[in-house]
Image 1 (spheres, helix red, strand yellow):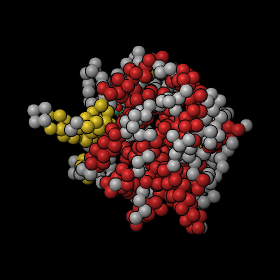
Image 2 (cartoon, helix red, strand yellow):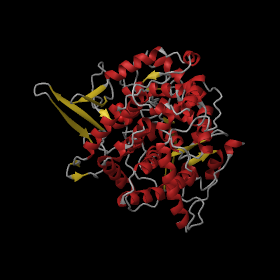
Image 3 (cartoon, protein in one colour):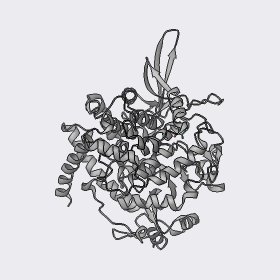
Image 4 (cartoon, protein in one colour):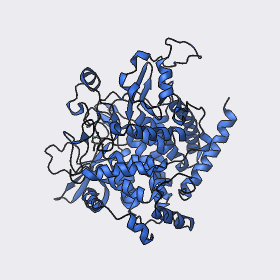
Length: 547
Ligand code: GLC
């Protein structure tokens, strides 16, 4: 039924995305965004881009703000925290045989319990990688990509069970033996992690980073190597494999992503679905078109269509949609069912009726038979904006929601990882009485400074840099003074987290990335994918946010 359309869209996507990857990032003026506070330096960078000097493509030694008129420089006097942040970030570097290969999760000398915070986590390294790339130091990113690729090739076993070939590690560690003068690696694919869950997000972040590297250096040769092509295909093979699924979303265990403890996100968590979508879109233009590559391209295009349809239809919640679910009939059978997953309206939690503004909306946490997790998760929603999983209207609505519910979602420290917290009986059942995830702490409604870079990127993408400025200002009031905590606790995020590490690297790098992106929005190209015309929304949801 969709045959001819599918074929043409595959060509379109190929052409479009390839040229996009190779071309200079789209200019902000071209994007026709309402940069109500567009800075002089931003404009000057656009002019440089027009002249063919797009900063993002001058690899070595580039510092954002470089060569901009002095008036522009004045409007961006570096905040004193920036230099401190760079020092701390550099102190977190991890070397393997003399080469920097990553950054340690936390450099907290005051902490008694190191656990695995002395390791290089794949997800934690992403903001570090972006910061170094933006600063014209992409070598470490290349080293990291190759080192983790090498680790992917290891045999991965938990007890007597062998994990999928494509699984990327959650983290790795370099063991230095000063006596023998040797460096060796150990890696964790879930077999040491608390809870023994493999990180589904690592492979996606790896692909996203590979594209970011290509985009920022203009060098596609790394992605084109046999090793990288193989690594990508192994990851794709894992998540595109056929099974018993009736949905295009990816079925996951609890704790398989940034939220790496039991938090009731098993099933089809938004974080993984958004990263899945983004990784598929990033892989598309990087895959070589040999026989195997072509087959992957076809499967990706089909999956992207199905996934965006599913997410935009069933995960999306706004005032209108909430009202529709509230009035759902249940026990419908056959293709004509409106309430396809048989969600019982009584299962809608009370808080969501108050939380939902008239303007605004978001992708909810999870959808599966008779279960909708109405919680807000920041990472998934922000990645949905950056990857264009969200339609332009949905992206605007997510930003509207953040503005309308500022106190709840941002409070005094950006940004709540999830909202609201679960408490009492529900906390007991859902977290298994996890003492680290008590209400408004850690993964259970805690505030994570690392999310600032994603918020900033989404703000620029949607033409609302003023929201990012507000958030960065909040972070600047506290982060350095508090020693760059991993997370904050409390309804407003006012308290340094109960068990938060200090000098948490991604809190530091996330701040730097946010600052650099705001200063030079052309950096956004590294982590954003414009809406693909071939994937134009197949459905139009309610337009409640426009009224
Ligand atoms: C915590 C976080 C996880 C992070 C790790 C290292 O386990 O939940 O997302 O990767 O710390 O910082």
